[in-house]
Length: 317
Image (tube, rainbow, N blue to C red; front, side, top):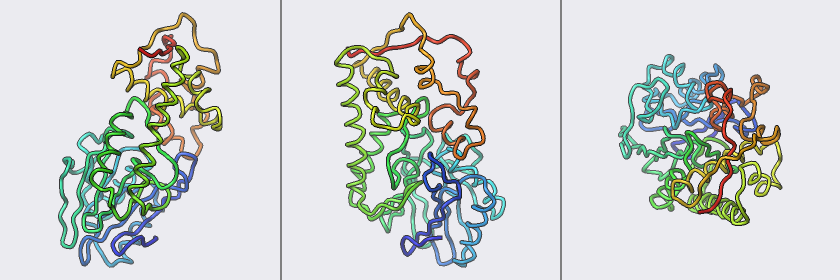
């Protein structure tokens, strides 16, 4: 347990992987003389549950509530065992599909003896995402909207690029002067505006690269990945393909891009980017998170991949 401020303690889960970096961050936040809330209890793991319980004992406090930023498998499953151990209610987004005791409205304020936490709906990375603001410290608990190292995945169908960009702008408009940003992965961030500006600039730059590539003529998602992510590890190209698709979906909605079906099927390499077979990763660390974040958390048959799908290319309108 690492103290980040007078109120905030970080507990990092032991689930390090390429998708979760050095592990998923959970937090204990003091909200009263003998009261704390937990944010993101993490995966269903006895060691992480016990770490939260040990943190409560060390702080001499009881757990008032369990707050979950979103329903990805490295953030929410630990809520149930922590609830069973303490009786504290689980609070989550109205669209959260996992068990919770109460849904939080956008802008709802949770008032405690010595502190208040503001819940903000923060879609984009996931539909059911919340950001929590510890108001007296102007500290943001951002889950996977913003993390301490690198950028985050925004992948259809649950990820929405324009919603994500709107969330980043909202946080910058409201909390550019924030004192700290505590993300779901990586270290804390003290320069809040700079981090939000960095994230927005990164998304805008990638979109400009995409539009520039399409200005040379129609292209498929694999062709765009090869052009835009040529300097990125090829093992990450399936994730890059999902990012490209998120931009294309947004541009199609805005009438700036249209798709057309090709008469040929994708090659084996193209198909591996568009619909990767993740079955070989079943026992790999972070495989469940990869499926969820890339939009492959259902089977290929459920997605309809057993039926021939049109192979699309995209062009500027």
